[in-house]
Structures are given as C-alpha cells and as structure tokens.
Length: 174
Image 1 (cartoon, helix red, strand yellow):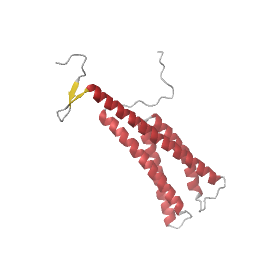
Image 2 (cartoon, rainbow, N blue to C red):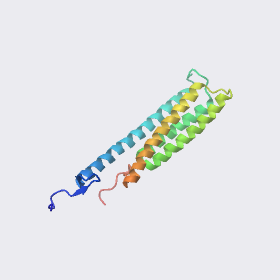
Image 3 (tube, rainbow, N blue to C red):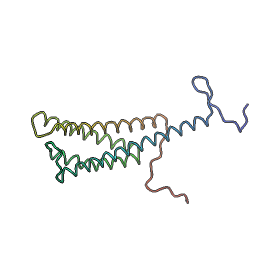
Image 4 (tube, rainbow, N blue to C red):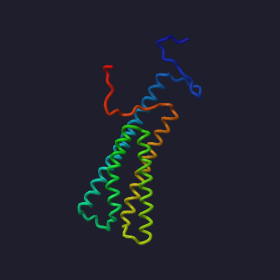
C-alpha cells in the first residue's frame, strides 16, 4: 500500500495508471494553451478591426481605392471596425461573451454580403472588389466564431470554467 508521500494513482481506460498530479498538470497545461489561443483570437479581432477602421477612414476622407465605392457599404465597414475592436476586447475578457459577439458579427456580415451580392447581380454600382472584401470579412469572423465555440465546447465537456480576465485585479488584502 502506498504511503502518504507517494502520488495517488488513477486507472485509465487502457489499464495504465497515471498519477493524479500528472493529470492535473496536463489539465493546467491545456487550460494555459487554450487561454493563449483565446488571447490570439482576441488580438486578431482587434488588429482586424483597427485595419478596417484605418482603411475605411482613408476612403471616407478621399483616398481613391481604384474601384467604385458603394458608400453605404463603406460606412457599414468603417462602423463595424469599431465593433470588431470591441468584440476583440470582449473575446479577451470572456470566452462565452466573445463567442456570441463573433457570431453576431459573422451573421451581420453574412447578411450584408448577401445584400451586396444581390445588388451586384442586378447591376447596381457594387464593385467585385467589395464582394471579395466582404467575403473575406465574413470568413474571418466565421473562423473566429468557430475557434471560440470549439474552446467553449471543450470547457463545457471537461467541466472546467476558465477565469475571465478581470478589468481590476482582485484585492489580495481581503
């Protein structure tokens, strides 16, 4: 019989024993890497938002992109750049809230893509470059949503609730 100083062991389905400390370490490493993945997705969303704001603002103040600009789409994209940055911050703070923010942006972009696709098909003044750019935006947000949804699903099936990033660190004094 093992004494109190030895690590407790657990049986895996394949019959091999694994120490509980190894299981805990493995779980902590998984949580650490998932936290890093969440931060990377959030950072990508913020960078994508900043790039969208800069590109949209440049055209709004008069830069010529080299193709016909559909002004309502330009205004939508510039405004959504702000939403992209906000969603990135939300993703960084909370996995579940970030997942819902990414899903909302994906759906909105998909609806706008459908609208401008229809306008292009009926001969309205929408450039093919706008269709391609909106397709890219929609795919980026689909990927961000799927990444966050996968991480959220993994947390739920493992029974682990990852800590959200606090705005103000907890008070150690009390």
